[in-house]
Length: 108
Image 1 (cartoon, rainbow, N blue to C red):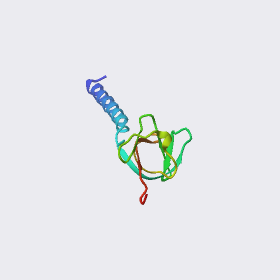
Image 2 (image 1 turned 60 degrees about the vertical axis):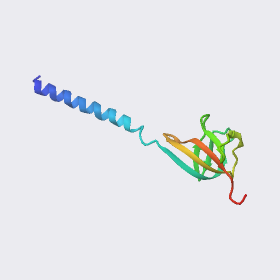
Image 3 (image 1 turned 90 degrees about the horizontal axis):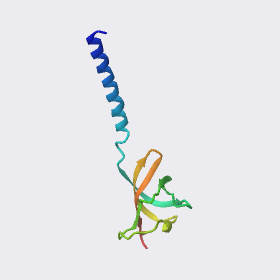
Image 4 (image 1 turned 30 degrees about the vertical axis):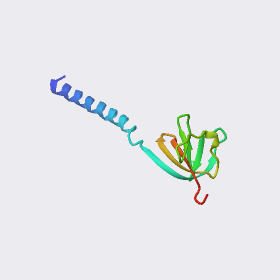
């Protein structure tokens, strides 16, 4: 093959590889923290998730659950009708709670 043709093929191969690698890295971006506020509509029996505003939010061993004063709370305390603020990260299969703050109801 001619040197120009070989150089062109190498350049084309390099561009293709760079496009594939860049696309792979871009999937990990944009997974910042989001916040939800509302009332817990449902708590799964196995404490794996809660539902707030019709949105299923997974709970893991690393989820921090606290009251408004910053006191740690165990997950088994979570109940329907609790008013909460939740910080989540978006995962491929939904939302994962990073922090759940149990709030006092207004007027109580």
